[in-house]
Amino acid sequence: MEPFYFKSYEKVVGVAHNVEELKEEMTRLYKNDPACVEYHLREGHIVAWLGYIGEKGLAEMLKGVTDVKEAITRIDEYRALKNMNKTQGRKKKIVRYYY
Image (cartoon, rainbow, N blue to C red):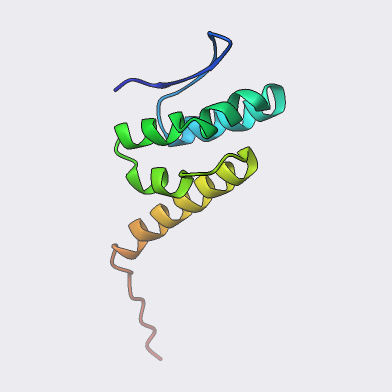
């Protein structure tokens, strides 16, 4: 699958191959070039790429979001929900104490 390329005036300033890297690049670029990240959010590029890589739930959560901090917060929430769902599917070990 193709990675997501953050571009600023036709120059590639960041690359993400998955959700974790997307968050890292968004955080890094927010400090250096916030307009770049805002542009990709506003134009729907990030949402489209997330759909392309199969992260449709996160894509839905980011639809219409243009604020970088809000997007990063939603990515964190999505990852937490995803991890919670993984752990709920596992059986818990039952420890019994006999006296």
